[in-house]
Image (tube, rainbow, N blue to C red; front, side):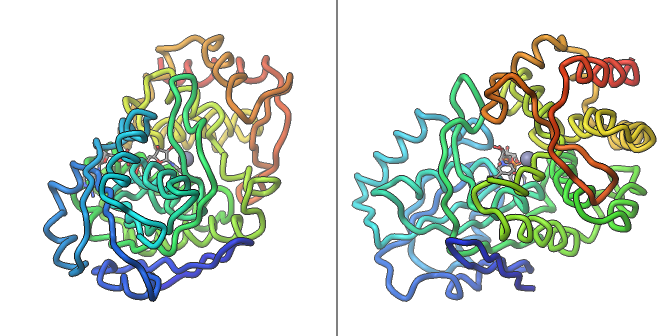
Length: 351
Ligand code: NAD
Ligand code: ZN
């Protein structure tokens, strides 16, 4: 299955099927001097052999620490050293193999090495259906997540759902949040269907190729209208304002990005006045085993302080993406007191 992402700056394919890496010639430039693969080291242990078999081309390999811990300035500098020592040029192509963290990290390296070299995303998580598309790349600073970054669209995305089979349950949960986020943003029938999944086993057995395709199409439609987040792209932050705060307070990587977003969605639904949706979603999260107790570990003061620091809330007002109803997002200023109240209601559900 092939989808096309069209933005103001680029158009590129997402090849979503078993054996997708074998289609690399569809996205490689006619002329390139070498391939450099940045792989998540855990993913490489699991799937490196299959990757090599499918790619069937020569490349230099740079293994990066698994997951979120890759996205640091220290690793960034080490990776730049690797590229310079290996005489990687502007005609080289960088490949990211792993989840959203390695995609963000390698994408940012590609965006900035010699003022930008081309790169290809080969995602291996459910969540990466979101991160691999749209061109946002970046790393973390100790003062904030994704604070250092660039827009850099890939040459293409080669997405093989077979790799998803080895994901631990926590990563399936994390990825599912971003899929259902796309459903909440766009389509009541689709989100109703996803809301019927109440066991981790049935979640694992979803037809992920079909679900990822739908998620990517929602993201693509938004990014096509607004590549640089001047307007509608903000909607993709549904659940993220509160979620990011939890994720950061817990310590990057401890609470999974999507797990934090899932919890952020409960708060978002309360703030939107969608009481029923908030409680139904909470119950579903509880049945699926999301780490909801995380909200009891931090005070609302800590959460609000983090939200205020977040780059999207530099002024006095705190901005949230809310829903009029499923499929109808809008951005609104939210009073601190309302966030406190929504947080308290969530904490009461957890207790
Ligand atoms: P991740 O990349 O941190 O991977 C999660 C864990 O799963 C890691 O330990 C990794 O080693 C492991 N893993 C990856 N693939 C596996 C597989 N097939 N089998 C077994 N284990 C596997 O996490 P993620 O959830 O994919 O991505 C999260 C990151 O994406 C965050 O840094 C977030 O900020 C970023 N993100 C970016 C965007 C964007 O638009 N750029 C959007 C959403 C999220
Ligand atoms: Zn996200």
